[in-house]
Image (cartoon, rainbow, N blue to C red; front, side, top):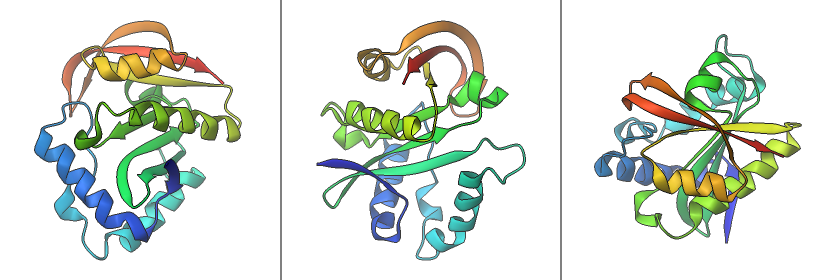
Length: 174
């Protein structure tokens, strides 16, 4: 059964495999940590940064909670929730985001991750969340719309991962 958990040492190897799978698949919409950067010291080295990010203590970075999606001992994907509506959140990354490893696509995990993630956002006091998605990412658009996403608009966007693209912005009321 899929569950969202806080980052933990137990699943670091699974996270590394997930990152490698996304890089090897040429995933155009999301770039996680480069897999070669995830060694035996990675978790402890990055923990202080993630802790500060969750507490909103990084200047210029939206407060963000990061969860890993696991099914038994299998690492499936991840979920992030940003509680501050900064410019970057509003016009690039959205207040929530999720990803599923390519070998698990088409199995309903995206819907499960987002559904559980929306409950987390609600528990953090959010009344609505913004999801942003490249208009070519049809599977994610279906998941967002299935879970109540209402299209606000489509804007021209640019980021390093996707280059120039059309970005659909959806609101979900919690």
